[in-house]
Image (cartoon, one colour):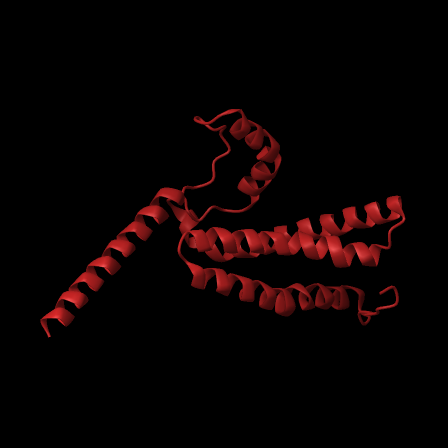
Length: 179
């Protein structure tokens, strides 16, 4: 009986310590987005800053950062909707660039869409799953990998088709002629 009490006490202490470590990691990494250059770091940090500055500026000016103090905290729904809008814009640009590459190289656009675009949308999911797993949150990695696919099928495919049907007033043609 005493051994079991000792085991429970040690288990509680380990869980409490793990929770405190998780909270310390979350507090340390969750800073609002800034458009200022890095104050510390080497040449690679500064080059990354210059490379990503146009994208960061556009997103910082159009999407409220809910990590900031003040009224931004209550704008989480608008932030989510604007994030989805930006994902749609980036997806359109990616598909357009793939189409241009297909025309330029003579490779079938359907084949490029099936390979390059599928690869380009799966790699970020893989990287986020790896990063979350390295933070000892394997359940979150599994949820992310399943949830992103469910989101793609339930929102990513039907919403653009529905918008096209509403805007054009005619049915959306789905074909597989070139595949």
